Image 1 (cartoon, rainbow, N blue to C red):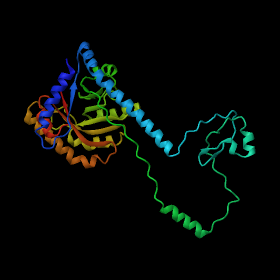
Image 2 (image 1 turned 90 degrees about the vertical axis):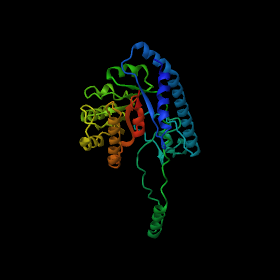
Image 3 (image 1 turned 60 degrees about the vertical axis):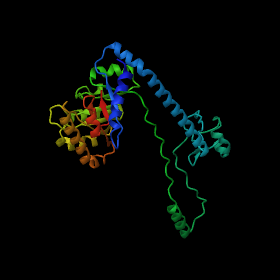
Image 4 (image 1 turned 120 degrees about the vertical axis):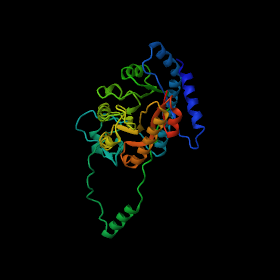
Length: 336
């Protein structure tokens, strides 16, 4: 098995279809490995290793550059990190003004005597500041003017956190849960997608190992996956599999999708990125299922995307046997 040869063929087939489209969408091939011999998987791992190492190096370089930018911004803003000495004895009151540790040399004589054994700084405290009895009273009019000035001043906006880019790790699909674990352990940095039928009993064999689950096709699968992700403390990306051709086992009936939406709303550790479906090998029957899914997505999209953990931008359906039809209908992931 030559991963790069198969991937090149898949990408060429996809690009050939996209070239005929007026408004081509992004489409990624998912190379499904499934149950393959150990020797072939070792070959696959060797072929993916250079690409994985290159992405890891770029990621570390970006993170180091971001840390340097953050440090430079903090220095420009006058923010400094203070090394805090541990107090040698319990019960000693530290001194803080406006949230800043005060050097001992700037403190009154009695404080310096109390903290004589501390080298430089005290520790932070949440003690409230005492009222100053010697403060001069302010006229009511002046106080009102000062309050009005405070209200008129626009609040400073928090700077937006710089988001980490999406890294181009190899996308590898897996359809048998019993093989995903060993494959994930052998190549944890590959971008694993689970494209098989989602098991309801052994969800923890998939949740947390696959970056994306493509066929979450039952009420139990959605519920248990959300609970598993919460126990692991992760965000699991997934497609909800919708049954558009009436075949048993091909996903959740559209009639049950309001119930699924309620479950998703109560599962913050699930992030639904789109819908998927499965169709027969008959191209025309597949076209009807795919177009029906797109129409269904468009009809419920506004309502679903009111949830913080839902974005229905993506669609997952189609294989190498009907990739032209699938891409024309709007699929973003084709399985090879």
